[in-house]
Length: 315
Ligand SMILES: *[C@@H]1O[C@H](CO)[C@@H](O)[C@H](O)[C@H]1NC(C)=O
Ligand SMILES: *[C@@H]1O[C@H](CO)[C@@H](O)[C@H](O)[C@H]1NC(C)=O
Ligand SMILES: *[C@@H]1O[C@H](CO)[C@@H](O)[C@H](O)[C@H]1NC(C)=O
Image (tube, rainbow, N blue to C red):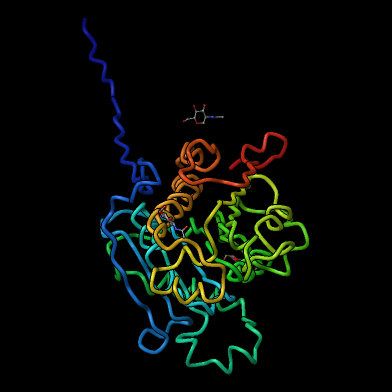
């Protein structure tokens, strides 16, 4: 006699929806491949806490966020830096540059009277604002749990104070020719950072970086993972768009204007190498700044403390 045995086979179909951040697999010193769009966000029309300029890839993918502040504690207009910021965006980042006061030169009295003081809370408020405001403003999708702070000069004083207040929102930081008189106490649990200086700012009068407040001092108060670079022959204004470079070099030591394009290509690459590693998760990209044979300009200082073998933290 035959018995019929029923066997049930259950087939599960899993569909994984994977949040995958765009990764640039190219050489960071090449120009990024993504076309970039710009948006100006204003206090009056958009009710933004600060005047902000956004640069973002036009391809609909997910990108980490870069939050930039310029010199003089954010009084130096972000509009002076847009060429390099746009190049960084083309490597796959949504870049926001903020102006503490806009237009600052209409407000010179406030500028001087308040001794460049700023309300650091405002920088946090701007991030909260942008999270909502940027929905539906572009096809790029900003990944808000991957934010890097990038600052120039005394803008780094603001970001240092922000990180001391509450660093939980931030993944990594780049201090470009930083200035802060508050860079004294060790950072207790610092995020991965790149500290960067230029020879002319450090050595040639009128100097725009000062010892004990500069990139070396930031490096000193930091812990692994951290990298410090200082390039030869370039200066404090060279990161700026050419028309503003001219204004800035009336104040800071003047470099060779014929090398500005070369410098912009280098600095956008150094910034992007660090951001690809810390925000896009491309571990090998750090070698473009950690291994000096890969750096296309002359360096006069280089310190790498990246692998953290003796500490608990891994990059
Ligand atoms: C720090 O920021 C995070 C993220 O915005 C927030 O959830 C947390 O409450 C903040 N902590 C403090 C002490 O302000
Ligand atoms: C500036 O750089 C160019 C190209 O490298 C060089 O030919 C020129 O002599 C330099 N000028 C000065 C003043 O150093
Ligand atoms: C640095 O890069 C060069 C050229 O790419 C390579 O030959 C060398 O092994 C690298 N050094 C280290 C320590 O990785």
